[in-house]
Length: 288
Ligand SMILES: [Zn+2]
Image (tube, rainbow, N blue to C red):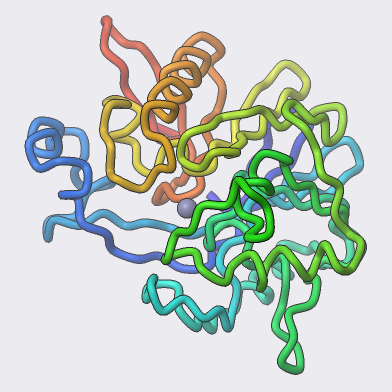
């Protein structure tokens, strides 16, 4: 689904790429136990799952908000070959929504991994410059502290090396950044909320419009199996114990509110609802 509504909000999806990842990262036994509902949508016959890299554009309250602007072209990521030196038509696809980068009011990255902040900037004449020149880029204080190499809270991760310089420093230098605390209200219908663990300052974005709710969950969940088995540790988190607390809290809210779950990496239709049916949790893809 590339365009849908939640209350009075219109949400556009912009895809950058899809890549096969090993299902074994979630644990072979758990994958086997869940095979009945994983295939064919959430698992491929060859032992992979399709990881989609995508951004969300939310139009609500007269504002245009970009959430998680993917990897970007021309990034040097030798320790993460999947995202190294991409050359995709992401910006053309963005424009195909009918929204121009100049119209974006706010950009929010759930966290500062390479695939969630890349198109903050565009490589032009050998320099990374802001992609959204009229936007305020909202950066969570705690996530900034975790990734700024000049601050004491910095922790080095080889896979993400160079991302702060390419995708964050240029928007700071351009004066486009507002550093925000937890629970920052972007506009009346959208609020950032802390969801720590995957990274130390990871956030989610809550949408509440005309009686309908949704959560943009970033990388709290990479795949639906983590909604059913939040204890899965795929080894990609700064602090997995904290991730588990965050997942359980969000899962309870998804079930209680009937909110639409909008993760960063789920395959088509990309979004869905977590329901409790006869005492069991079930992730229902949108439209099912
Ligand atoms: Zn990600």
